[in-house]
Image (cartoon, rainbow, N blue to C red):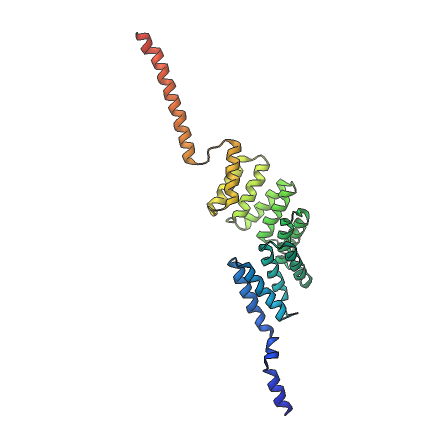
Length: 246
């Protein structure tokens, strides 16, 4: 009879409810929603994993995912709390440090953000997003050359990272290197033609320097210069020969 009770209990729904093997599926669902930009649904999945299966071996990933979703929902303080929970579980988890840096940056706490990015990079020196975040924080701290170095490091790891090209452009512009900045903005736009920030930065720089925006603009400018030259030359020829002939 005891054996029968034990067998029955082992297959009961109550025991299955605490089967941690279900947790990765919930977190995977959250990650999928997150990648699709469905942040509230992602948050619901992470919350479900944390509430139904407390103290599971996967809490680190659920808290980190929760931080990501909350960040994109604009709930920065809650996101910060979630990342801190993840870091209590694993202080050397670079993704949570980078996420924390992003939240602090969005809150305008640039030195703290820089510290978080540096912590992420001390754990993983090849973390491209942390290098880019470091560049952003340094830029807002007025340390443009260091920001440029950070963006260049990010681009050495991923040459097709449009955000780093845009950041590099801003740093170069602040260092007075306008032509190089324009090249960086153009590179960002060649990777992502719909990148609004790079587009507006390029247009602002062109307006500031008086540089034609496009090849078409330059061609028109050249045509107008040639037209003026031809008119002036014609007037000179007229004055020199035609009038004298009279």
